[in-house]
Image (tube, rainbow, N blue to C red; front, side, top):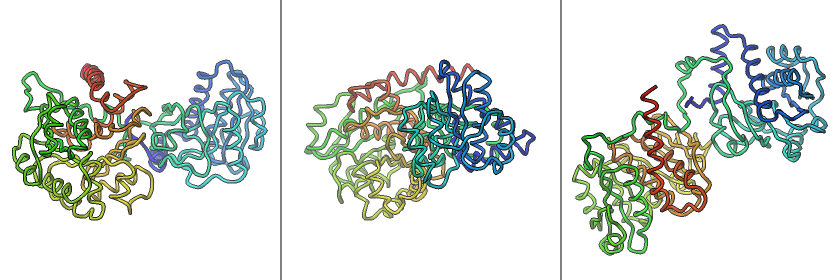
Length: 498
């Protein structure tokens, strides 16, 4: 279930299913039962549940959950925002099946509760929550009571992950059919708790009509394209990545990237080093080669060897005209190109020159900015969600855009995008982004396409950090990749058998 559905797309999935003959009330019954089952699973010994219902179909799910929880022996108090007579048809039908009292939606419902079911607003919320409902949500959060949210925690925009005024902080969230972007994008991601996806009777065939373009970044998205070495493979068949080093006082970032490329599977890696940094780089490298590259002409000559089929530059390279000339020389070659850090900032005053050079070539280009670098290069495009921004930047630049963070988004110029769900807070340390850029160039050297290769690198980077855990420094990431690759080998074998 890789597809991510916006609120509008999820609404289409519901409508297509209902038009196909499945009553909307059946979908609502299944959704509410799934929420009740999650409460029972998590809190088998709880006695009292407060169910908070909103004025729409999310509230209808809450009525169903309340009924099933009552049948399972829980003492349930249910509160509704608004007039029961104004509920949508399916929600109104579920309200008539609820035999308990319908109370006003107030803080009083929390008194003596053990668990809260949040069924106030769903993924389609597009306006800020204010007034009494905002005060109620703040009271829920302050109470410390565990919350199971229906679809998304109330206050979260399911399409963007944005908080609309104020939002519930949930222990767990039950959503339906497919995840929404807001389950993975910050800040919504941090408020959802554990997210599960319930089957409520919507057939996967509706996706053929909806054709979603956003996906969870999981191995199933790109594993079929993964460049496993074959029995007859040799190092040249696995690609030769070039990583451009900065000056003598700033060489470590390039070496981190080079190590990431090598561990990610590139058959050969060369650091293109300024002459004054040659001894520093050569003295710190073993399996990675070093060549002198002092200017754009020398880089062009190095990349004229078509076996050197991917190049990365930017980390530690120094902002300015010298790096601009190196970037343009790389883009004039036939090699895949990865641009990070200073390679992006060097074009902050003239991004159109960079984008024109990218669009004039056939080989893949990936850019891997963090938020600050993105703002410098795409300042006018900081509108909408992180997913919106990454897609717009990819379309404008012609490159695969890797917008880094705890919710890294990979976006292709054609509109496809992935949002990473595998990450670790221990990545917040110097040099981890340099390793990621190197891993991306390693995947492109092995001839993966930009979107799949960057998505694979981002996932492996997060998985390595997760596996290593506390104490992680950037140098640990490449050394943890063999474990991640073994896991992928096992997963690929399982997929082949199935």
